Length: 336
Image (cartoon, rainbow, N blue to C red; front, side):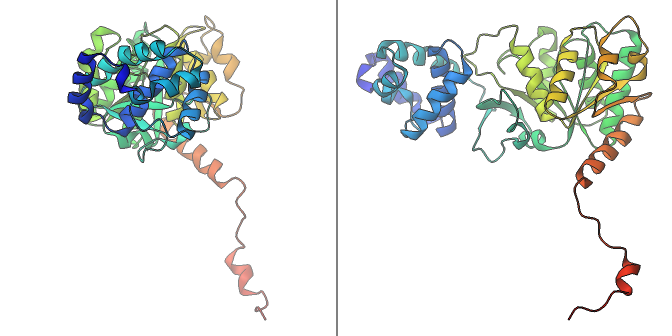
């Protein structure tokens, strides 16, 4: 309850409460639960669902400390401390940050049917781009000259064909893909593995800011999150879910882009490889993927939009009842 707060917290609370909307309160409440439960998203989602049924989540958690403590089976002081650790970082969020929850009109529906669906997304930029057809262009942080050239040409070909180039803002292939899209005058989507308040790598801080102006930067991580190495795999899962396809330009065995290739197939998305990767016997991963369904091997970047568009058309037509040819209808008997 509010009575549990210190005098200073009460004053601060009353001054700043007006600056947070209902979705912000929900996200803060969820992050508090996540903090209390040791970072377990499964447990936090379950607890948050219970709080929703009790109609607690629309208001600040600080108004219902005892109820949340009882729900979690924890001491009220533990819950209160977790809340007040998270809250200042939410208050410091850039005013341009948009928080999306499952019920938000701009929530990208394509992520709903996949594992590890985030409860909230933190977005800066043109949020509507998250629901437009996009392709992940991904690869190693240490590309060859040929890999950089392929990333550049891939991004240009996709942008020209009207697809949004999506990548992870990492060094190497990711950075080339983003910059090529921007140079083409097209927006790009950066899916990052840190809160929006951070830039990783630091060298891409300016690029991240530029993408937020003309494209969109999205994270599944709240401002109160302490970044962990495995968060970048969750980033890759989200990136794949937001995209209709992923293309691995170049990577080593076991690299992050290769892991995303597995996520793409798990999510029944399309995966594209270059023939040059398949022919490279220094790595094993291309041949492990090349014979699987929904995997396409292409020779040059300009092939990608055409093959992808055709694959999407073919998939949409599956299961549709064929109409009778017009000439047969001309000879059919009239209906009674």
